[in-house]
Image (cartoon, rainbow, N blue to C red; front, side):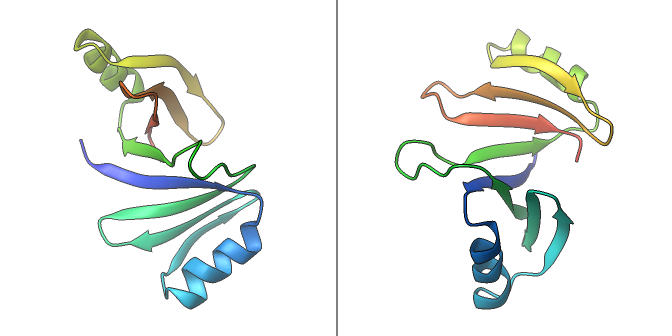
Length: 109
């Protein structure tokens, strides 16, 4: 597996976009309602609108999977704690938690 993105939840989408884009100089590669992604080398930094909780709610590690359902099945067989696969109009994903309770995600985007 390869890490695809780290998702940061923020109530300040414009200010955070300004910081990661103009201040840090990362190239913005996605601009959707409530969602922006920045190229950051081998992975992306994604900003997701919603309440942030630094120190209480860590970032979500999102791993790319061409076939989310197949990878979920493999990882659950190995003991991973993953929820149901959710198919949206534009992408498919599956959320779970690591042993410490940190959020992880499998996503085909």
